[in-house]
Amino acid sequence: MEFAVVLPLLVLMLFGIVEFGWLFMIRQTLVNAAREGCRVAILKTATSDDVAARVREVMQPLEFSEGTDWNFTASGIDDVVQWIRVESSFEAVALTGSLVVPDGTTITGECSMRKEGAATEEIQEGVGA
Image (cartoon, rainbow, N blue to C red; front, side):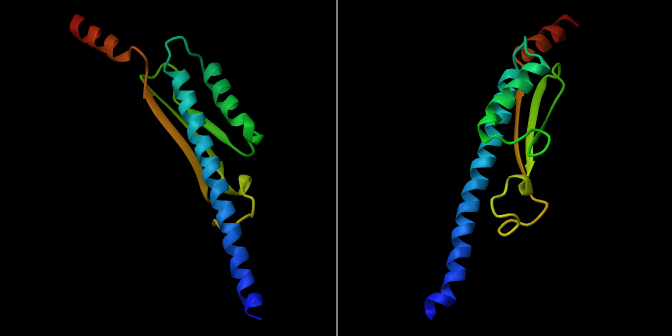
């Protein structure tokens, strides 16, 4: 009798643990994709296509579709500070729906880095002025 009372609570806890682990793995993948995209974007020879390809390459093992399950935005390729944000709605990647996490939750991975050689160029421009 006691087991029948405790079983729903144990099952809910089990799904919560699994969902939290999945959420953590997805978030870590988004952060890694943003970081890898930034690492490409800060190179002097980088193009927007190179950055997008690298983000897609890191996200590929999840087998989620871009534009449906996840999206990324990036700064302009000529900006001194490069930033990339990779995000997904939790509903698109959840295992249990909104059982554990409320609707409207967004998982985000962000990274920003300074463009390679930007500080040297700014100092030289300031000295020559």
